[in-house]
Length: 490
Image (cartoon, rainbow, N blue to C red):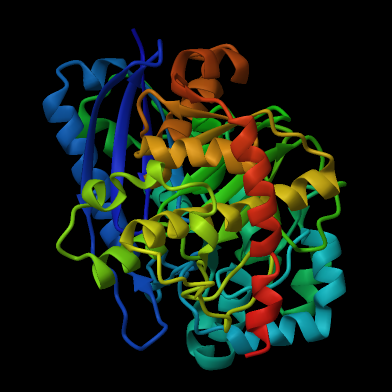
């Protein structure tokens, strides 16, 4: 029985998930690391902390699982997207990595769109936003020229871990798509973008499919863990791309709703020919020869956390949401827009802020709690509607993960608002499952993507839309859509 290891490099922690070839989870281990915020709006981490966490997690797995060194055959990764890692000629980290949630690059985004906006959208299918890698590169060029001149290798977080295991410089297409440097149809670095922004191609890593073997682990690491055989390391994928694979999102008609601090509505696309005009993101999938579209709500679970902490800090989440099923869809006219930190899809407006509207004297705490859940879900429906209208996607089923999958009333609400069957996962382990699946597919432990999904992805509860509620929510959603242009004026 062979083992595969999926390593998920997140913003707050690194997690290792060990699976056998039948898709059964053997065990997990994780380790936290620090987030550095040297100035307001800055968000950084030390890549050496990621490396230490990876080896500590592997040490723990090796100590805990007796046959770890005998049976492990392949490792792959999922990683936080966009974050910029720079190495010098000695492969030393030059400066802390600038993370995806760092917002210092507004000026650089404006410059990119003013000077090269239409061309960028045509090549990458995305517009420049603070989270992406290219604006971070421009910021380094403008503010830390000495560090830029030292740079011999540029990569993303998970790729630094691949390098640490193999000594090879690599990046997969799903992560490369989030740099704004990749021609996502030609599957190559864009010479037009590199020339426009004075980036030398030599500093960029070799591109791979997510399932591709980059190399085997080095001799030193084989000795450290007592491996007597080669262990292959596979390129891995961006966290959202891996989460999609880990939820089985490879066919049209099946989408994913992920509600964490932010929220994501995601669906696979067979080609990059669909033209979303930057209204939603379009990236390469971690599954071979596929793409995925993704809309983002900046404050999804964060809106619920804010509401609870501000107005019901004495209650547990279960207590706050208890009884919301007794309130009619639409919260008796009360509407909430979850723009408390700005909004991404569909407005791309960093300055808009949230609102409760149509507050009535009969509204109590439960009305407000239900309205928050409805507003978060309506915001994600905005992305669903863009995909349905532009790509003719008809969503019959949606896999719900994250905080939005932990409350049965919210799950039923999702079924009614999206007018689709909502499915939950039996065991929700996030992008790390997708990373392990990439290792299994790439190493030949499983025969195909479809075979891997059948073994690793296990669905649990199902929620069917209620026809009466679907009709009610359609009316409420139409009112919700009128709120943004109204409050934008003030």
